[in-house]
Length: 270
Image (cartoon, rainbow, N blue to C red; front, top):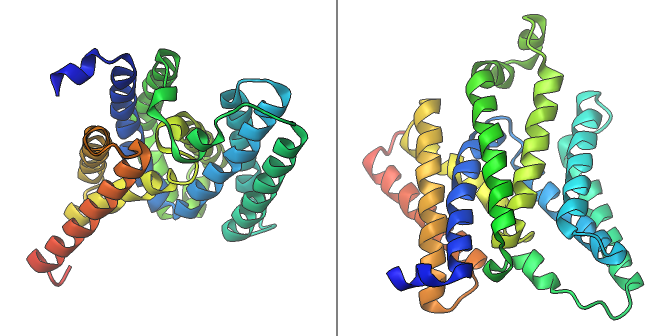
């Protein structure tokens, strides 16, 4: 296995897997606890419209998909907060709208030479050192943010109205979390893909909650689980000659259900 690290693309993929594992290990807890799991899937699919727009305009799809996803996340958050629509309605509307826009944009780009499948299902060959730098910079911002505001976010999660009355700026914190959610999803698209990335939004916290109810341990177990799944799936995909993103998600899902079965046997009343 050591010789794999002599391969430039594998080193890039390994670093990205590790960084993305930490990012989703932390983020998943807050998404799941705030019951925004489906929002992750919606934002991921919104990226399709952004990628297609980048192809049409000849712009880096990362930039256009990032702008698309952040705009969609903030807009859905605002509409839900002001009681105009529910999360499910907002996600359903933007999900369909973005996919439809993406199809239109691609139809306008006649004879485009672009590997769309790498964005839909991931492609470790497409990961560059620049992608790793962006992921590392996001991690360097995200961890201090969580460390500083974690108690306010937990307070807001438990009772948003009381938190707001107590002086917590719930709307601002919610918006920042949505921006991080959109950004981390877009960063991870190259390795996992638009179609599969929603699994990483849900599985880490779901696994952590099987093991503990202490939020600190849930986050730590979620990080360990995701890093293991990402890196293990990367090696496994190389050995089996299967797509890396699909292998990671499959391995993560199997591991989760095995853990769920063990948890039911060990603590049947939990």
